[in-house]
Structure formats: C-alpha cells, structure tokens
Image (cartoon, rainbow, N blue to C red; front, top):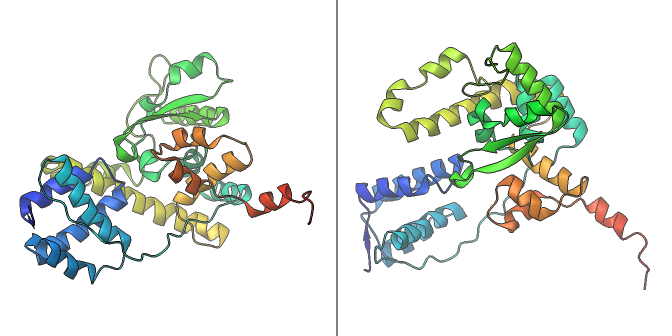
Length: 309
C-alpha cells in the first residue's frame, strides 16, 4: 500500500494506541500535531511526507510519523513509509538541585505540600509529578511497616509511564510523617491503617470533586489526562512558583527533583545504575544514564593521582 488515508477513524485509533505508550505531556503534543496534519492532508504518501518534512522543525514531529508506521505494523495494516531524519535541537536536561536547595524547597512549601516535595524526591529514585498526584493510601504496604516501624516502607507505583507498575522504597522518616499526616486527616481505619483515595489534595476538595464531571461521564481517559494536567498546573503555580521559586530566587521544574534524586543516589550513595533503572521505571538503561548526570568534579578528583606523561 503506497498511501494511507488520514481519516477520523485512523486519528482516533492512533490516540488510543498512544495512550499507554507515552507520558501525558508527550501524548498531548503528539495529539495536537496529528490533528494538524490530519486536517491539512487527506493521505500520507511520499509526496505529502516530503511537503510535511520541509516544514518540520522538531524531532517529535518526525517521531509522530514513525509512530504511524508502528501503529500500522502492530495493526497488520500493509503501510510503511521511510521517514528521513531531521536535525533537531539538543535536549536540555534540567539542572541538578543540591541538597540545601531541596531542603529550602521543603521548608518554603506549606503543609502538606512539603510532604509532596519530600515524596517526589525521596520515594524510590524519585517520582514523576503524575505519579504523586495519582498516589493513593492503599498503594503503600502499611501492614508490613506497622509491624516494624524502624524499617523502610514499600509502595507500588501503579500505571506509571507506559502503563507499567513498579515497586519502590520509602525512607523510614518519611513513612512516619506520612502516617502522622494520615492520622491528622482522620484516615486510619479500625486497624490503625491509612485508607482512602488520593493522598494529597491538589487544589480544594470541592474543585477536585466538580472537575469536568460531564467529561468524566463521556470519556474517562480524556478526563484523567485533563485532570492530571490541571492538578500539575495548580501545583506548579501555587507551590513551585509562589513558594519554592521565591525562596530559591530561580525557576524550578518539578522534574528536576527526579533527576537530582537519581544523580544523588548514583554519585553519593553509589547505587548501581541497573538498580536505578528499576526504581525509575525505565525500559532502557540509556535513559537512566541520561538521568544520572555525572559530576565533572568527581571525575577530576578520581584522576588527581594519575601520572603525567
């Protein structure tokens, strides 16, 4: 098949196909781009691809066409088109925050969002913001921890990026403080175990309950995507911008906490990169290596005793 008809049914199928494979931000970006090309072009073939490529500026645009190839292969549709490479911009990684900066972020955030920041940084090798927004009390294995409160806790991060579950550790002090927070919120059952829905309120309880209830009835997956984005926007503006950025006097991206945690564990705690891959939930070790930024000063220190020729 030399060309593929770009119709509404194909577009909807592609959106469904992408949902378990990509993070929320990537999914939104791809959906917008696909909508644009489906509106402008009726078919995808060598001629229309050449027209598209002349206007492409970013790798994610090329990646969307490659994704169409992948969908056709997985769906047994006899279509494949060669997509030339384009010169993309190099991806800039978030700056690494040092321990003092992270402590200042925690101290500047009001309760319970100081706990949110601690969870983002300290659980496993760092959490994604979407994971802490979705995290429920029942995701933590409280019964095991209550038997020995001097031990670390364990949580299951459900439906992370790529719809994968993973098991992560929670440091002892954070477990104690999370338990005390649940107790303050009157969320302990008759067995003194925290229970209930989402752990943290991102915005007011009333706004969360009423958020796009009509959309929830029509399209639950779309509602989840919109809800996560709106809660992240609330956290970014009301906590990061108003509190943390003001305290540090610089702009912050929430993903910096995850990069900083992975780098700290690898550089300071000497956690093997293979173990970090599991904690971070990465499919590829190459992705983990990007997260664990190497500190040049440490490299130089390791070389200080080498002999000069």
